[in-house]
Length: 343
Image 1 (tube, rainbow, N blue to C red):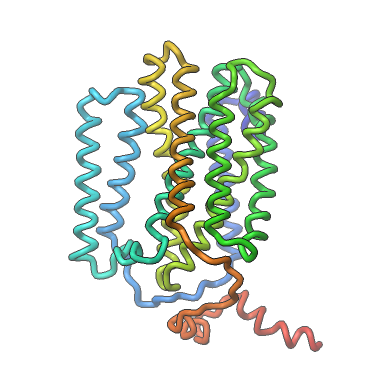
Image 2: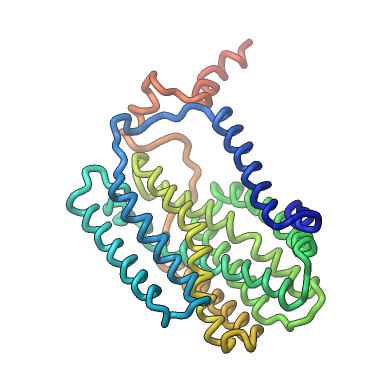
């Protein structure tokens, strides 16, 4: 709503300046307030070559798919860059397998139980969610002529629902197996996309758009929380940073990649924009299909018991926690708690 209100009195550039300033303030505050982390591998090295190869491949692949709806696949650089991205990814895998001393993403992490299907479920869920969110905006602003501020107000139920969903997901984690929490997240984006895809062009906000906002608000936090639990329970503590980072990457990358695929479908079905509603519906039904595949994969292949543990089970982790050097502020607080209670 702040950005929507700002666009009424200033140019759109100030939205990005505002977000940049806000991000700098938040980053500085977190950097100052966050406790010191316990290093699991003090002598660890960064795989700069693997980082460059993997990141370049993913960025180029994403660019190709998101540029295709605008310029078409007949544009020469589209095919050239697609081949380049695949080539870089193959080189990345070869580098990790045979040459990297400390690979940025060890291949054996994918041998962990449920980890590979988890990656697929998370990616497809966020691809579906990003598609639904984008076409929700497009439908309201381009077909129903809503202003940015009006849409921001209309998105308020989503923001409230997402905040409540984060708390609900945390409450459910020790009470429900994580694959079921993940399934609820995938199902919510499936239903949300389906509600949007079946809307008439003009309709009151409360009939379907409001319902879609509420339903889709469950997806991001349910999927993210459940995926982090499954990932952390599937690997050793030394690999949890890699697993958690991969889940976090899939969040934003899936949102962006899904739009590229959906945009290509939209332009092909809509006849290059002559029938926008038809294209929007096709893209949203594509999102429904993505979420359906994610839901089926989760129900069939992801298996993790509910997480009610405290502490670490890995023997290697005990050495880290018992070490004197690098104890976190949280651990110091836990050590002092009995003394403070007696006083």
